[in-house]
Image (tube, rainbow, N blue to C red; front, side, top):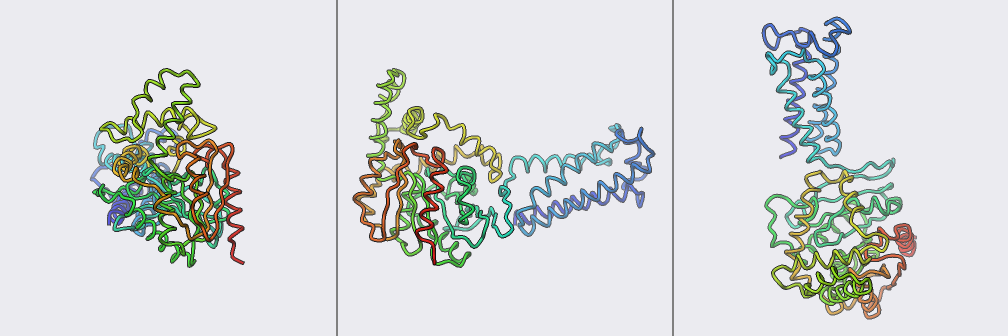
Length: 455
């Protein structure tokens, strides 16, 4: 309904531009005695007013067509309506600025109100606009769309150079650390071999509708949402199974899915497997304290001494932030970086997110983590998921202390996987293998694809 009303508004705004085109050609007067655009400051010294009128009329017609096309596109929810409307708004602003006579008298009649409306449209689209990143592929797919999962509108992107390729669903980390652009930017070759589906989970990134009930942010609900999405994808692409990839928290969500619905998946690819949150946090804190001692970093040691790895005190979020700060600086998050600057740059440059969504990302991520943290600290997959009934591949960074690699290795050795399991080490990576060794990760994923390719 909101897009429909938006589309109608743009169409009406376009029709107003046609009225001004009629005024310029003197088919009628919008107001008795109105001579606009005669005496335009940008053109009056270059040629006669007759030519100025014709140029203004042509400009206004093109602007009107842009608003009509954008409005109709919004009405039918075509993904291209935003750039078309933005282009029309730019033309609208320019036409009223360039053809103004320099006189403030009767400014509203000379398009002043239309100028303000078009400026408002530009600002709104600049702050709130988002859309799919370009993808050149004749037989490809490139959509950014909403789907209803568990009664809540949530966002997915679907990208690939061939819409008939196998489907790969990616489960992001966090909870709350959504980034639709991550695979597109860091491992783009996957789009040559899969239809890559990114999903901003409930309460994260774009999937935070007004009035979202925080109490619905639970492992059980997110598993239900994910299953509903898998069923949707299988039906949409007419396939019996899809590939599943999880990263960090997404590995917990992924293993929960394959445990309950193993027949839905060709294989599960786990990147930075989380096994036991409580043990993992204790190992991670011990690692950063040891690193600080080796460096003789008294400031780090002082701050880390105040951190309780159980994270049950009232200021546990502050303590967790302190631990993650020093973990980042000690190479436990990225092996080849010591800041999040590349992640921030990726988000700011991602057309999939509006500026408003980027600005709200930290708050939404923090809310999801705060809501789900007590539940997370109870998770121990070695107890709850001792058997995996679909092929599983664990990608582990040798320097990962965000989800400590030793727990991944122990879980791999203990888990019963009748359909097959494999542990792949990334010797030059920490937690985020997508950043540390993207080309190697691409090749290992393609190896999985080759092993399970249908004859």
